[in-house]
Amino acid sequence: MKKVTIICCVFLFVVSAFAQTTPVKASLILGNNFVAQSEVVSAWGTLIKSPLLTSELVIPYSDELLEKCAESNRLGETNFYLLPLVGLSKKQLSAYWNFFTTDIILINSKGAWRLINFQTNQELSFSWSKERAAAAQLGMSTLPALEYFELSASLYLARRVDVSKNFSEFYFSKESIDSNRSSFNLDDQTIIFGTNLSRREALVIEFPKENFLPGFLKPSGFSYLVFGEGEEANEFYVIEFTKPLCSFEPKKDYEISSIRYLPGKL
Image (cartoon, rainbow, N blue to C red):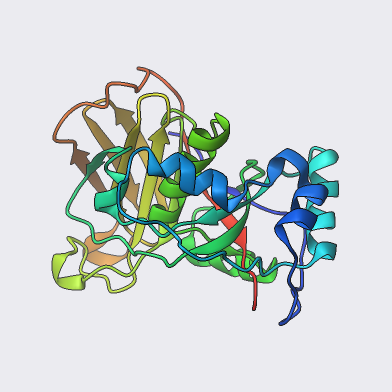
């Protein structure tokens, strides 16, 4: 079985409550790693006919912060992108993605800018709570699944930059899921998700919060071992997909990671 890995950013950034910059400055600082709002709106406009972001979003990051991100990018330590989130629903995203998922209620987000490190910096972990604590110490947040689906597709549609891992790597986030609809009956559920951009496939799986090891990933199913106590000690779960993942490569090794972003403040 594969050890679990997480994404870890090595910088702690403190954002002023009034730190802002302009698209022109952001573009000068980040170069090709800045994606304009007009690019993203135009790219999605070919797939979604409803109006998208009729007003210009304020970039809630300082020039100093972006310069630190740009420098760490140049050193090869990170791969930060600054790009706008339109706030598309799962139904709207279905215009691009072919979703493989159980009946999970994903969180919608409002339009906003996101400063995300798409580079994988790995660190061993077997606990969601430890991962969240580590993210908090770095001043970062875990990216929700719908935001990742939108932003990764936006980057590909606008720039043909592929940040997906073809299901060799899964990401996780803490989502608010109705406990009555959760097979684990947990109020603060975790989900894992992965993508393949070239085939437009997106997988979302409900997941326990703590202490696990992945078992196998096949085109038709996913398994994992949960370490618990008492009657629930070391239970093995198998999730069957309704249809096979056509882009999954057999015998491919895989990891489970987090995607983090730096939250801006207006």
